[in-house]
Length: 334
Ligand code: HPA
Ligand code: ZN
Image 1 (cartoon, rainbow, N blue to C red):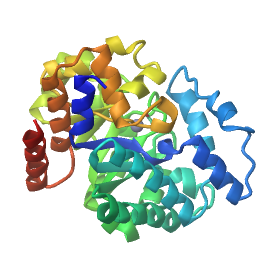
Image 2 (cartoon, helix red, strand yellow; image 1 turned 30 degrees about the horizontal axis):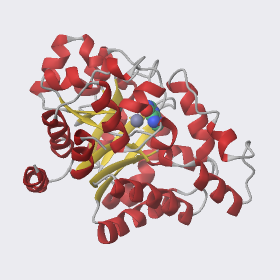
Image 3 (tube, helix red, strand yellow; image 1 turned 180 degrees about the vertical axis):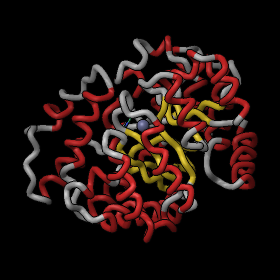
Image 4 (cartoon, rainbow, N blue to C red; image 1 turned 135 degrees about the vertical axis):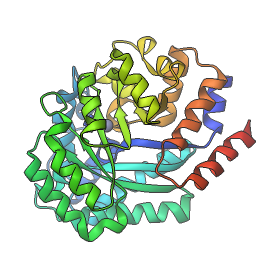
């Protein structure tokens, strides 16, 4: 490990953009498929992994939703979440805000209680056994209708004590934020914070409307905001954090090469950008792998790493006091 990599490993950090279904490693997928008597369309981990080559977001999503199909019991959701939390601990993640896609489970007849209770129990155990704090984010699929999303959101009501925020993911192009105006109003009524994927493949206009129409508290990805100087200023004025996912951007061809990744430009412009793994089982690594890859490609300084790590806490939904404590802990280690 070089000096920068050692620093990355040493510093405690938060992860704010992680789809729990995207942390489903092939080995665990095969194990769960076996105990649920489900036949996967591949006969080995290697032949499944050979399909993990994507030209765009949609090609990835088609494979990602297929993988989800083997999850059935509360134990399956617990095991999936626990496996991610162990990886997070190894990367010195001390706080994580994870998304799940309720509709990818409920549309197969799995009850929302099974999904939420399984994930939640792992998160509770992570606090006591691994020292990792967390929030859970209820993420709706934007390729579905607003009415379907509204109906799914109502199913969250008995579980509001376990859910911090609403999110919006899946196919971005053709599904602009304003399609979900009523959904986000309802989430606000329920006391949820609000985030949305915007500007991953979609244009700067989608980032504008995620902010102005949906009233989001944080932006997932946001890469394409850099095409609009006024938007960059607006995001800074509102102190909105961008949850950036470098290896995801590379695998989904949002960038052609990590040496062209915009994270350094974002920092230089004073945007509150931070680093995440998105769907680590599919994109080639967990959060530290993402740090290592851009640190190498963009020749990051120690100051850049410290800024990114501090941004990860500033952008979290933790209380101001907790954020201060985490940042003080980072400073103590420098
Ligand atoms: N973008 C949109 N939807 C998603 C993603 C992503 O990166 N990962 C899982 N669902
Ligand atoms: Zn994502």
